[in-house]
Image (cartoon, rainbow, N blue to C red):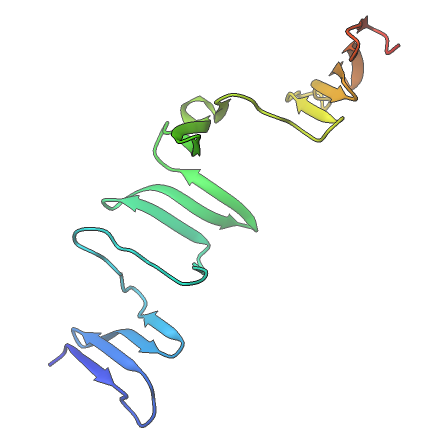
Length: 178
């Protein structure tokens, strides 16, 4: 028939071949499992578990890993020119980062795709390094307004110049740095 399992087709080949409808679909050898182009692994019901004793590698030469539910793609991991992209493909659906905080599931960060990717943190957002944290705002002039923290002082800049400072001792400086 046209569906068969072949073991060692030639002497000392050490391969098991699986054919359906007259075409080779899968080969198992000492290097692993190789599926023919266009072949799928599917499970009509229940879950599919991949359990490995070490690391799991996914190597896709097309640069994309599509995430689907019932055939509809809702997400994508992509290599775009060396940049790692995470795409939410369903219109106006958010990207959420969840975790376990003391036994309770929490949403630590939500990226709101219906609002240009607005980031909402559950509690705090810590920016920058010690003594040099900066929050920039987009400006068409090329000089972005920013709020900057340096050595316990908080400064506000516009047009690339310091305009206001609140010192670590509580002094408020306007139009001067001392």
